[in-house]
Image 1 (cartoon, rainbow, N blue to C red):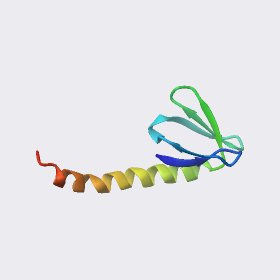
Image 2 (cartoon, helix red, strand yellow; image 1 turned 45 degrees about the vertical axis):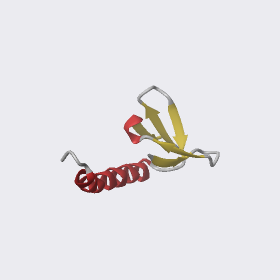
Image 3 (cartoon, rainbow, N blue to C red; image 1 turned 90 degrees about the horizontal axis):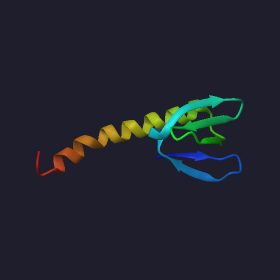
Image 4 (cartoon, rainbow, N blue to C red; image 1 turned 120 degrees about the horizontal axis):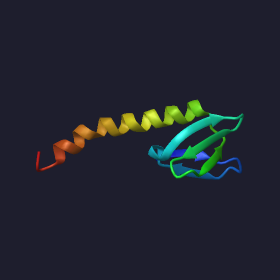
Length: 72
């Protein structure tokens, strides 16, 4: 999950796999795969950086998870 901030200051955690598009109009509009739109304070570039960091963290943890798996 990545953290996003709505315009009213409320913090949400979003599954980035649900993101269909990001638009800067000038506010950032996130369109989700279910058609819902969210307007957030972060720029599209900030959100992409958070998404990449999350994917890297997951990829780095995979070898540790596999080594604990008794079936491997």
